[in-house]
Length: 93
Image 1 (tube, rainbow, N blue to C red):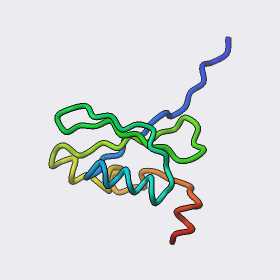
Image 2 (cartoon, rainbow, N blue to C red):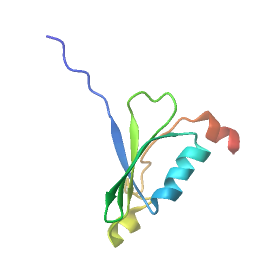
Image 3 (cartoon, rainbow, N blue to C red):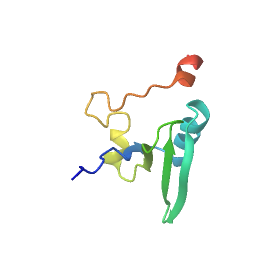
């Protein structure tokens, strides 16, 4: 019997503001906005994906507590959280 295919379908990234983060990933990096659904009470399900990424998505989650806000930019405990290869970004540097 063949093993089921495994892959990372999504990574959650805590952000300060949904619209600011969505615009940066879309307009600067060229990501596609896969979904932006209002969940009520100020919460949204915002998902973006780089072009040609297949099934991998990035979920943009707005910080809801002071602890989450403090973790923005430090979500990997001071290590690199995510490596992204993107020619469009490099061309803008």
